[in-house]
Length: 236
Image (cartoon, rainbow, N blue to C red):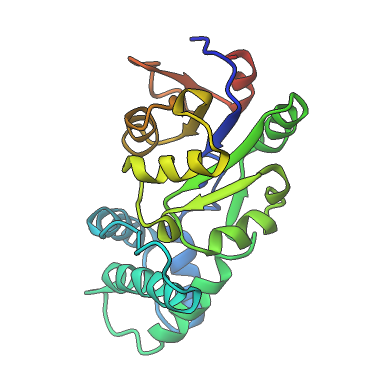
């Protein structure tokens, strides 16, 4: 699959640029132990995956003041993490645990940047592409990108909590396109989710690429599957 050279290349964040180091279950269980709560990482991981799917979209009204937005973002995660630990026994220091885990995800400690990311982004920048992030995430993403030393590669970062729409809603892609004042055909989007990234981008008129480092998905109708980000350089 070869497409016309785009002006802007957008990327998803989690699962595309970096992943949770060791998994959510392992991290939550380890930190909870510091607050006196014992749990099995596998149980926490299963609960997180199930409860995350049931959460409402991580999106709030566009233009929400920063202070109010911060409260809404933290409350979204508080409801999720409470549900993850529900039924696992008394956790007297849960509030302290949650505050700690929420803040520590701003830094690099819990994130692992994929090996291909920095060199591939550097090569794209060298070729003159403008790069952006479109993510269903909260305002901590700005801190995480900075901590992972990826902020320097991106000209824009659009997150669902601020835009007021979460992928696959075309509105978040349209907001990113509007930032550059370009048409959908002048951009492409790379992400690890067929539903959120590929279907969402295509619904908004962008070219789509699925990043599939484990080789579990073949290219499909209207999108190409990549095993690493270097392959982007061969696509246009």
